[in-house]
Length: 239
Image 1: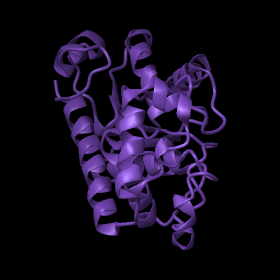
Image 2: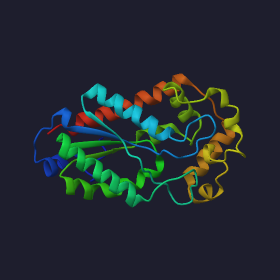
Image 3: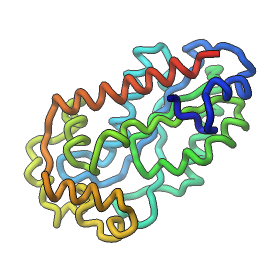
Image 4: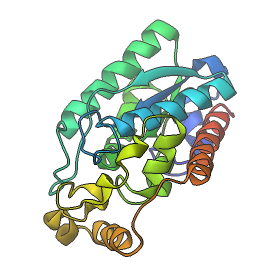
């Protein structure tokens, strides 16, 4: 089930990259990927993605004994989506490369799990096989947060943010003012809705059912994401 950056099974990757040596849990890094300057409506901070990914990554590190090595500063966004300030894919890749190389040199890191909290970062996955080869290090791209959270800045993200204490519940009514905050659900992002079928589906979902904060849902979503990262860590250390 593990999502290898190289395709195929992670065990095959270990044989190729790790030379069949069992990794100690303390030699596995967990690194969060998010965005720091992205509009999420008035009820959520601009670094919501980074904070959610960091929460999941650090909790998975606590449960497994793997090393939480922080969060990238840079992030990428897909063409046609204007939600804030992002960097080029080359910049994100280079920051990731430097971070993992520094962790390998300083901490002896031999494998990494990337916890992605920003959908725009997904194209980075395509560049990971070359980085795995360069660093002789298995790298897993965990995209569970993106896969389960639903529309941008809507119920799923709001609920998880409320659980970790970063949502402003007093502004939930303002969050539904889509003219002032077109990024919420991507409802007002006309170009994105034209370009991406998934963006159109998510926008229509929010238009139809609205949004809310549901802490029970938020707890379930976070736990699902954390458990998935824990499983990635456990699988990556197998021979």
